[in-house]
Every structure is written in C-alpha cells, then in structure tokens.
Image (cartoon, rainbow, N blue to C red; front, top):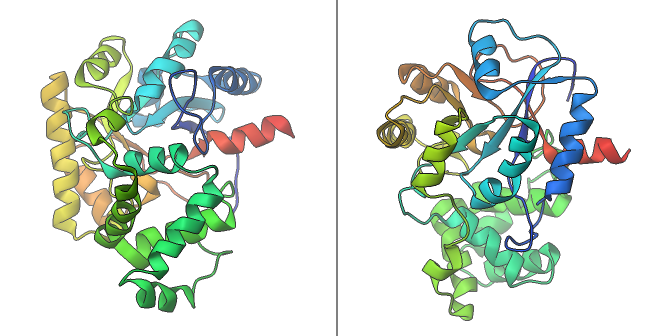
Length: 313
C-alpha cells in the first residue's frame, strides 16, 4: 500500500474512554486527542467541517488541509471528544448510522461492549468465540473457508489490526455472515443474563445530541441506517434501502439534507457510489489512506491508531 500524507485527508475517530466510558480495544482519551490535534497542527491546516466540505466540493483543497471525522454516533465522542474540539474552536464531520439515534439497538456496539466488559482481554474473547464456532452448526463451513484464508492479505490496508483481529473479522464478515455471527454471539451472551436496554444506554447519542451538533455548525453525514459490516456484499436494493433510510431519517431530524458520508467498515462498491450520487451526496470518505482514488466520494482518512503510532515513533 502506498500512503502519502501530503494531500488533503480526514482524521478518523471512533471510541473514546474516561471515567464513564470503558476503555475498550482501540479507545483513546481526551489527552490522546489533544496530542493528535497538536501533532497535526505542526504541518497541516485543520479546517472546520464546513470549510473543508466547501473546498472539497469545489476542488480547492490544499495538500495540507485536513478535517476531523467521527463515525457511528457514539455517545463517548460527544461527551469525551467534543469538549476538546470546542477548546480548539474546531468543528467536525459526524457520520451517523441512524437506527440508533431514533431509539434502536444495533449489535455492532453491543458486541464490542460485551467483549470488553466480560473478558479479561481481546485474546480471551477470540478464544471463546472460536471455541463457540467449533461447537456450532457452522463449524464445517468456517473450517473450509479458513483453509484458503491469508492473514497477510486480508485487510492489509489496515496495519493496526493484529493477525487475530483479521482472522476474527474474516470469520465474522465472510465465513459466517450476519445471521450466523449474531447466533454465535447471542449464544455467548445468553450465559450472562444481560439486560439489553440497561447495557446499551451509554453507547449512542440521542437525537438531541445530533441536533445540538448540527446547531453548532458541525456537519452531520450518512453512515448507513443499521451499519452492516459488509455493506458492499448486499444486493443493490438493500444498499439503497440502507442509505435512503439513513438520508430520510437525518433529513427529517435536521430539516436539512445531508451532503456528506463515510463508508462503514470501508465496504462499498460502484453500486454504492451510484446510490450516493442519486441521493446527491457531494463528499464521501474511505477508511484508509490508499492512493489512486479520484472520486469525491472516496476521500482518504487516517485512523487515529496509526497517528498514535507515528506520534510515538
């Protein structure tokens, strides 16, 4: 993979921790966010979201222009990261998967919190997960597909993933698929007698949080409706339903049509791009820094985990 930092790009953030929000895999603190902002301010211009959007839309971005982006409508972003942005006078793109801000519950974050709270380490979770797969009706299918699995090639554009991370994601997204993966995780969770409403009440922003961000000139964008981890594998009509529902929900909430987006799990296809163009989305972001993309719906982003490694180097 060829990576160049002397071109306009976004910085991509997901999970944050403090006294109220758990320190799960990949989560960073307010102090980490401050270090990242000040590290980038040395050689780049961190633009407000609206200025970056306007320059991007009109092809006027400079090579050192960057923006801040937050995926997944996470409450920890609002409570931990937003005060830091306000201290520096910055605004950001917030890419919202809309089912959760209207009161729904999605498994992606539920499962992430489960593996953080109920296991001593991510390695212990993976061990129990694969043991559960081996004892399930999906064992033979997974075993067959893993015979041709190359850990070095899968998700090679995301160097912060460990080999076990890659193996897990391959089994989750390719070997099992949504229904079978949910079945495995529900089998694991049933042993804990979890109250799902209570367990999820600190995970996502509510509609009032999104409205407040919008009122403060942050840009609210699309991230699908239910955040499928392999969106590109869905039939085109299912992809259209994901983004149309996302668009309509946010448009109704904000009384303003979203014009930006990011691709969940970097999963998209030419069909996805066509759907976004139909919705008149002007600017979109990938989840890596790979070169050789020219579409305004495929701007690069650097993950905060890679930035932290560069700071420490």
